[in-house]
Image (cartoon, rainbow, N blue to C red; front, side):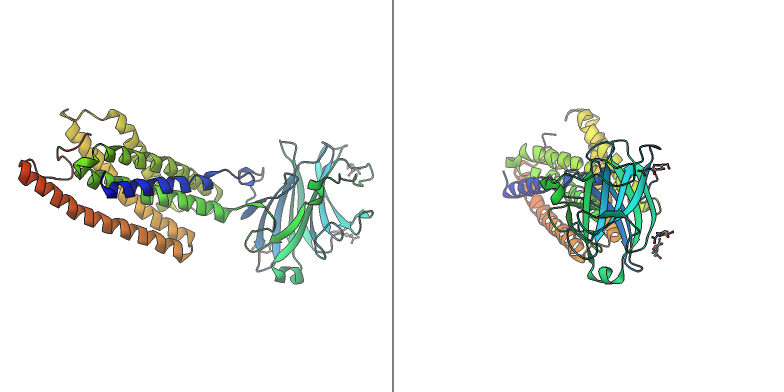
Length: 395
Ligand SMILES: *[C@@H]1O[C@H](CO)[C@@H](O)[C@H](O)[C@H]1NC(C)=O
Ligand SMILES: *[C@@H]1O[C@H](CO)[C@@H](O)[C@H](O)[C@H]1NC(C)=O
Ligand SMILES: *[C@@H]1O[C@H](CO)[C@@H](O)[C@H](O)[C@H]1NC(C)=O
């Protein structure tokens, strides 16, 4: 096999393995709210299977949250709190939700946790509005609230959060004590208001991260793997020794590119459905066209006429036409995506460098291929290499 074929195969494999990890699904991302509330970030909190969705407006220090957890017993409570003074439970300003046993409706109450023994219903030490609770189909409860973060807390950029779940609520509205298992004692941490991060081993997830996953998947598949596969088909097969290896490499690159591209396409559709206000129609339409073209390409593999068949000529024209269209549209859409993301310049420049490198390698291989083919032609005096029908292919 030609060394360049080995190198491209290696690249192809590397990209493929690099991509398995970000494709793993993250739990809070799939949670939806009945009133279609949208938050910019969400976190899988590290204990008690709890989730926090939030948006923070730093211009007026307003934090909008949705906290989701399941009570430890069906008639129990869930709580999310900010502790303005310390890191644990004592001193926290809590929002608590439970289902009222008489009405069956989920309600939110506020509690001041001045000590372990004194948990009293009380207005919070800061302004809270739009407090609502919702009982969800899976038995969990959601607490929604908007909170004015006091200036001294907001200036730090981080707040201490505490959450908890409990087994029941008394008729007087007093909370039945929660368990003291490890998970109940570890349910605290800091919340980074600006970046959506949290301390501890939070399985964090934000819309920004979602966009980055979408960007990486698509840049690698449409922007790198497809061009790489096309290069393999065009250049590596000129080396007789690389036959039929080039063909399997080509198929491998394109099919893995397609698989990753479809995953990236799916994340794109999801992002599109989440941002109801804004539509990037150009980017979206090119994305949809790419998906259609690539799906036709992959399907047409199975309808490929035999090499000697008279329709094979037309099939080749179609295959190359679609292939080059995917190449151009794919790279174009990656750049459109960079503009939408307004990502760090380093990512865009890394991609530009990759494309320049692929382009330079192509130019070099184009020259090498011509030399090889012209030499072969003068030896065998066969048909000239036209990149399409040089008679050397197993296709
Ligand atoms: C802060 O701004 C947001 C919109 O940017 C608005 O929804 C919210 O009501 C504002 N909060 C306050 C306390 O003015
Ligand atoms: C608590 O807040 C509500 C409205 O937000 C107010 O009507 C009520 O008087 C407050 N109670 C106390 C004890 O401050
Ligand atoms: C449940 O709702 C009823 C009727 O509104 C009310 O009287 C009662 O105090 C509520 N119970 C609790 C625990 O909130």
